[in-house]
Image (cartoon, rainbow, N blue to C red):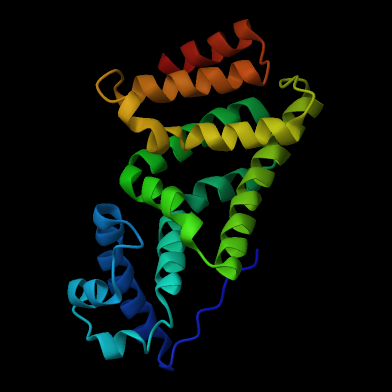
Length: 219
């Protein structure tokens, strides 16, 4: 998976990593509160407690910071997708259920960050945006591969795994995008169950088999 290379003026990799974290932590709250465009480099320097002149030793532009923010947020839940790749021998339906719940939990734990990531990513420059979209596409391909395995084994009966995978990817982040419309109506457990049920219905999983799996898990 291609990643954008941010070239700092400092050679010490550990120091750069530590400063990048401070910069992203500072920018995260500012982007959430003010938005990308209204947040200035001076704001970020002040919040991160790094002098503005030194800030440019670790990044070149504000676009770099937005890209680092995207990387930071995505790194928090990427392992949940990688688990799918490393579980080749697990039954597709059970793996899908487990993976969906883990991803939904990871998103739920950082709703504001994920929301900011999606709404502000439109401001990324071309090379940064391409890297971001490629990474997002990689997650969709992982889901698609699991759906194809499920089709092959007979548990999923969709005809278009590419479309199905894209819809699944949208559904797992829907709480961060439309959380205002769910707030007060669902606890997380009920919300996650509803989303997973909806996805399984879309994948045309046998209803009796699915209910049996759910009751066994609850028992």
